[in-house]
Length: 240
Image 1 (cartoon, rainbow, N blue to C red):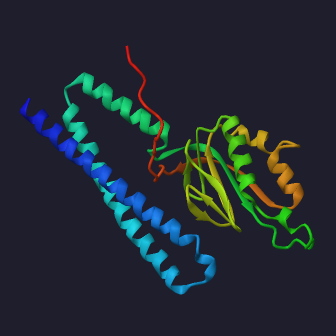
Image 2: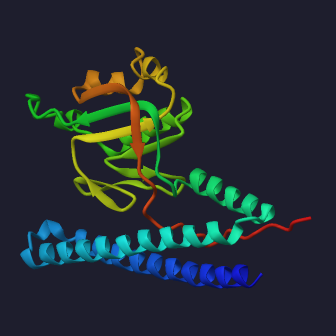
Image 3: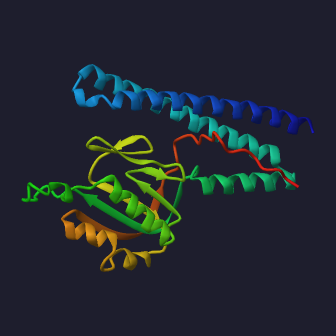
């Protein structure tokens, strides 16, 4: 009983540490995004500041990963021999899996989209470029076809993911991404035939002139979501 009490206290302390690091990550990420919106001014000082913020973000994120591993170890020891706690731990892992907070791997599809830099039509040049609405359409098509996990240039797509146009750049989860854009999805490889069907969105993009490449793979790794879920209006319902 004493060991379980100590493990529980350590678990709470470690959990608070994880929350603290999450808040640091959010602050650094917000500062980085704020600086990033003014990069078009070609100000070398701002560029240096972005690099410093990125370095700080990487350090804080590494600390978060170490804290999460320690918390996982403490939880495992705390629930040892207790079936009720073991069931709660299994449920927590399943929830993290569904929320995208766990790295996952499996078979699936790899889609690469790129601007057509050889286009000669200077009037309709926009049709040869990859836009944020293209990514939204492709992601929706993948989810509708049964994809279980998706990433865009290494950024996990979750329920709160934003795909936005910021001037002439695209942001996913607040981070700038550049072409070529790689979309990876864990799903049945049979989706391949659905994606390349005549009249499908990827086929329409290719017909417009955008470079489109689709491959299947038996070993796709989708990273976990690195952001923070923020719930402003959501509250727990009454339980019976």
